[in-house]
Image (cartoon, rainbow, N blue to C red; front, side, top):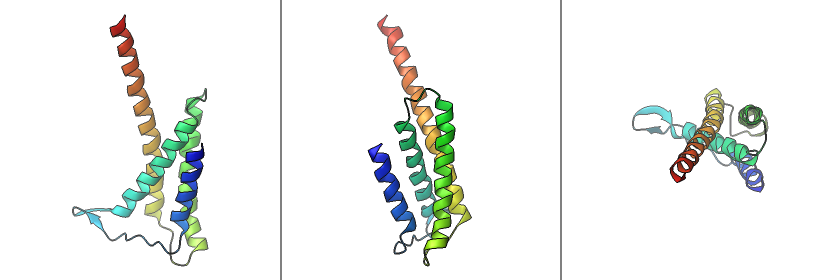
Amino acid sequence: MRVLAIYFVMLAFLSLNPWLRPDSSQTIDNINISRDKIDHVAAYGLLSLLFMSAYRRHKQQWVVSFMVLLTSSLVGVLFEYCQLWFTSTRQFSYYDAIANVFGAVLGVTLFWSYLFVAVKRVSQRRKVSM
């Protein structure tokens, strides 16, 4: 939980710092996906993964997954609006907000994919050892 709190503060600092101005004009291998969007997806994907791992022992995991997805997405959109409201050098971007939501979905999906593979491996080991 402490790692989640530290990461959240770092994410807020990086999102709302008026001195940091990402160069969104860079493209990757002639593809129209800027490095900035990949950074957004990675940042909010990691945020979702940290949320999911913090609440992994909760009994109703589908509720946790929905709440993590909702919370991470809302934080991403809220930070985009805060850039518009509280900084003069940063601006709101719909594409950044979409990348944040996509990252949140990707983080929850990766968590469940990893969990599914881990459970499958454990069940296969039990069958072999019997």
